[in-house]
Length: 173
Image 1 (cartoon, rainbow, N blue to C red):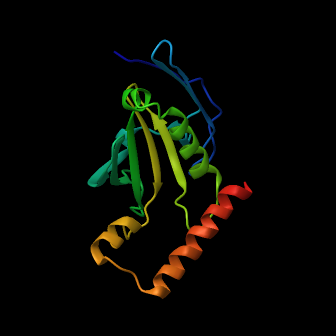
Image 2 (cartoon, rainbow, N blue to C red; image 1 turned 45 degrees about the vertical axis):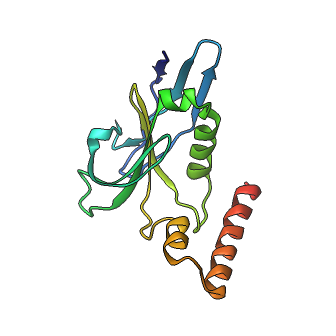
C-alpha cells in the first residue's frame, strides 16, 4: 500500500483576479512509500483554487498516469477554456514518476514560449495532483501524424522550427 501525505502551509494570498502560481516542492521517500507534498496554493481573489471551482466538460485524453479534461472556471464570465491534467499520487509513486511530475510543473509554470502551453493553476487533494493549463485546441502532433500518415515537407519544417524554439526556451531557462 502507498501512503500519501499532504502538507500545505498557509501562503500569502494574491490580490485581484490574476492567477499567481507559487512553487511546489515534491519529495518522495522510497523507503517508506510515502509522498510528502509541500505546496503554496494558487489563489484567485484570496481563495485557494479547488477542483470544485471548475466545470468539467469532456475528456481530452487519457494516459498512464492520469487524464486531461476540457474545463472552464465556474465563475469565469468569459468562459475561458482550460485543459485540466489530473494525476494520481499513488500511481506516480509506484511508477517512480515524482521527479517527472515536479519537472513538468516547473517547466510549465516557468517558461514563456508560444510553442509550450503554460500552467495557469496548480492544486492538489489527498489523492490527486491537478495542473490547469492553457487550452490549445488542435490535438497532439502524434494524433495528426497517425491520422495523416505523412506530412508535407513544409509542415515538417514548421513543426521542426517550433520544437527547436521550445527546446531552446527550456535550455535557456
